[in-house]
Length: 150
Length: 80
Image (cartoon, rainbow over all chains, first blue to last red; front, side, top):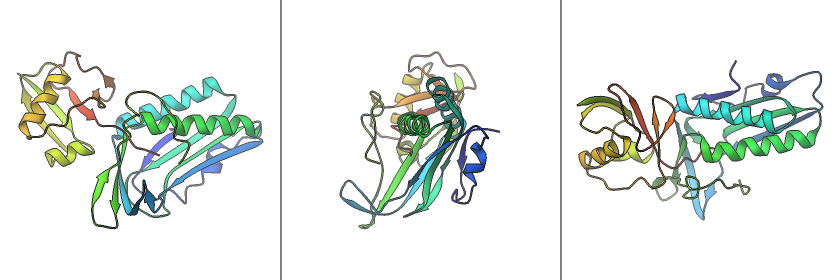
């Protein structure tokens, strides 16, 4: 089973803890990225995600493989939405299990940071004034950087 | 002339009004093919922050393309 999935359906009901449970794991860290009602001083009504699924899954799996090389973790599961999402919907859910919490926190942060700059997924935001636009992070394609604010 | 299968995402879907198409082209690299797409759909966005994928793997703008290749131009991503 793949550790990294793209889903056109809601992901809130997936039992992600079960996906990474092991008898050796004492720390489970979840990142649940949700649609918020604003971005860069604009009020957001809803949004759409697109993914180039064939490559997104490959790159997501590569990031997870890198996390296993860097951190002493047990299991990882990540699922990212595509399609129409409303405010409060989960866009991405990521869970890491490890012996202790510190390693799980570090690996979780590494994976979501890399996902944001490497995985071919795009977000089209719709605003209260009726306009919409693809969110572009101009720095992403130039060099690795972190999105600690989200 | 080669035949290429293209998928369009994000801005490029808006520019072309398509999600995919098959094109016969004289282009032999992704750079040349991108320029051809810009001319064909009358947009000029540049590709400074873009990447390219060839057959579902990241490629180079000056890679030599083969007949039947699947090409995806990748605008700046925004997952998460």
